[in-house]
Image (cartoon, rainbow, N blue to C red):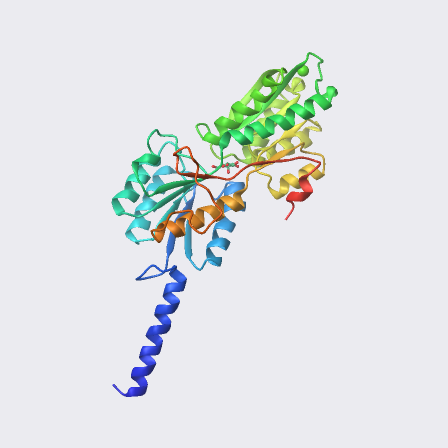
Length: 341
Ligand code: GAL
Ligand code: CA
């Protein structure tokens, strides 16, 4: 080989290996790739907040993230995980479709020796998290969102005696629940209502509807049906376990020319606008930006065989659940401007 070509080849090889090391964060033999999914791209919060931040933050860290849409089907997600494993991704970041189907996914990752970060839907099967030493969870403390929403509602109820339309001292409420069996939906349903009971205020549930998709369409349809039902005129409070469903309920209320106190969870941009317009009384920040960042940080560390929170500000729970939990925050007509981007 002529000396100049030999030198050039060597220089190119060196450049490739240097670029390779920085792009893949030190993993030899290729760039660091995160194989990820969102349980449904139709979900306002997951698609509108978490997906863009997962992509933006991973890009900033010089790693590749591939995010697929599981379209609300656990069977589809199982297949997508198989494909990621065949492609030899460095690490998996998985948003379960069915929170009760974590074990199958964990077993796949374990068999392939690939670390796994679960996010947003906490596994509900006993022993799931303990079944693999390289699985972690990033999410929230579900109950906290219901407690915060409940406290906001209790304070507002006390401050607005006119909300008790029939003056019976009882809160006649309707509730849009979200996905049955989802830890967030279950805890929010329980805790928000419990806040009234704990404050010594009686409650009466007029209706409750679940929706696996947490969707605006569902919120609209259910609220419209409730308003024209036999108890329609008795409704005094609308509790929504997420903003997506709240937006639908607001549409239905507007269409019927009815104004009712209404609360959500997530603090999406549109919710802040509804609060500004007086169409929503409060929401709870579900900090998807930090949940996304923690997911990527843990994924990178896990792929590199490092302790997952090393070099980050995230803390693993001390209860043995191997979880990073990002706090919720109350968003009210008084403070919503602080949450505008
Ligand atoms: C919740 C969120 C909902 C929905 C759900 C999906 O944390 O509040 O809006 O996105 O996750 O699992
Ligand atoms: Ca009443």
